[in-house]
Length: 203
Image 1: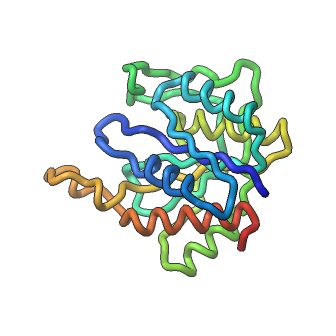
Image 2: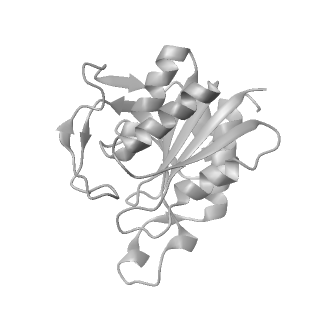
């Protein structure tokens, strides 16, 4: 059976809940595939170290990481991870990075090797909004994406990163937050199931 690691993140910045965490925990309950879910801290360096330890211990065949992008209203299938840390938003320890590399002397970029075209076509056929993205930013999501693809390059495994919008159910009754793009949590979980199924060759 295919061994899988799925990652999400704890809440961060202005968000009191993180749908990426809910998606990872949801996929971890699957009984038809060997999935280990990991909810990572939003902390530069520490999240990468936790994931690296899990990768070495489990040696998965497939790794899919999920993260929140509060500015989008669709599933974003990320193509490129870059060797840069930098964001005006601090991590959950208050740490801000200004463009330093994730890995000294590491490759500038890695590319996802998930079946992105097939995933996109399937989600669209199920009326779930989805786009291919060529920039995962340079915040924690990109750091984890880079870590995943570094592992895949070295191990011959398959992996990638998916950004999700805010879940409708998680938007607080706040005039500013209610303007945030969102998708129902049920559709996010449904999309995640399809992404896992296609990536693992289950459909």
